[in-house]
Length: 132
Length: 217
Image 1: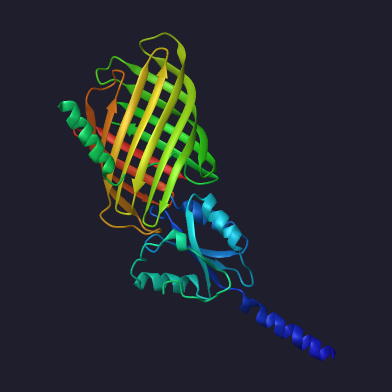
Image 2: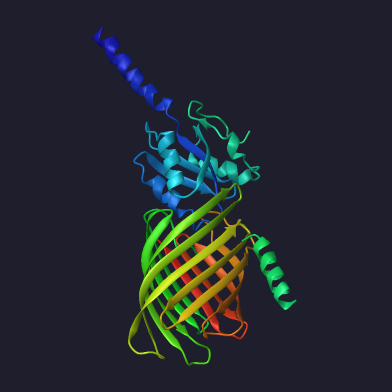
């Protein structure tokens, strides 16, 4: 019985990191000037769960790569973006790394204009591709 | 008729995409240092701290020298800046800033120092390729009143990314009141920024150096 419990505990530990997305990707309005957008990077790097931050002005994306097994809540993200002076349009969680997102957006065409009235938060949909 | 033309030109300029504009508020918990050498007519240094993204407090020093060499002002002031309104659009941002403050001023045409008041506003609009900004800054006291109106129109030859060097070409028109300079002082500038450093350098049409540096940290 003890062996079964130990195996079960070990299995849960192994699965646990998988339930967390690796990266949070956000669409942000108002991102037009690198000089002005520094506040977003500074604020997001202040979260203990943040590993890396990536900002793309062209695609209006702010991505946060998370440390293993950690997360940042949507409310905290929205507050961080809003307090930096920008408007959060949507949040998506993905298993892509920052490097993969950087490579993907460098090959993509710019995003079409987003209607803020139709924004949504996809916390329950990890891995969802944000462009399609 | 001349007045009508002037108003028409002003309205048309206002319709142009108005900022990679210098802003008196960087970001929450950010500090901004601005230094300007204004074509032999104005010199200004400012330092602000922004507890929140919508306001900052700090102070500055301004020297105004009239083009005829008869007037000089040295104004040291404390100032609060407020982001009155921001529009965050999918490919653009627009802002309206207002500010006010008090300080002490000295001049070469009056004795001692006098209490000076400062109010101003800035409206700007920018995309990644074009921008415009209009700023009006009034310094006055019982001894003088000087308003500096500055209009900037900018164009970027390429849309910079977050980690790239940004380059802008800027046309600046500036007018002074209170006997500092007559007419409109026009300057052509080139602006670079990357990370938290911003440098702008150019010359007025009569060949005087116009330059500005700004640092966010």
